[in-house]
Image (tube, rainbow, N blue to C red):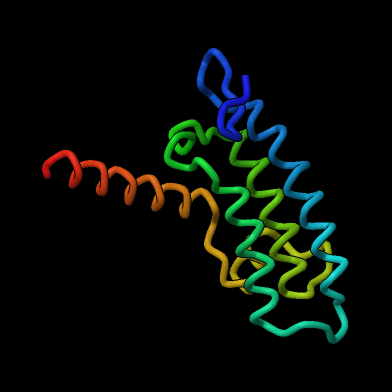
Length: 130
């Protein structure tokens, strides 16, 4: 069942959500990549915007699904992040995930999701206390 952009299943493991999210991210990355040629092209600011748009797509609903980041879900998320990071650094497709995300100054999305969840919990606790 799809609700507010998140694909929910009976076990709340969000496997279907990440399975559908990965091709959507790669499709959006390919569409935006046509605007960013490897040789020359836009500078750092435009490339940060490119990664920011796709990061927001990937991390949508992170406070809800962050606890279900198991190995398979994490792999699907990292695969998409690697493609985006390689494009942002103007690298070759043989560059590893670690090197690409480090050079792109883009921390792992699972860490960013945990941060977003922690901020959400903090704000919720503060709101509950008045």
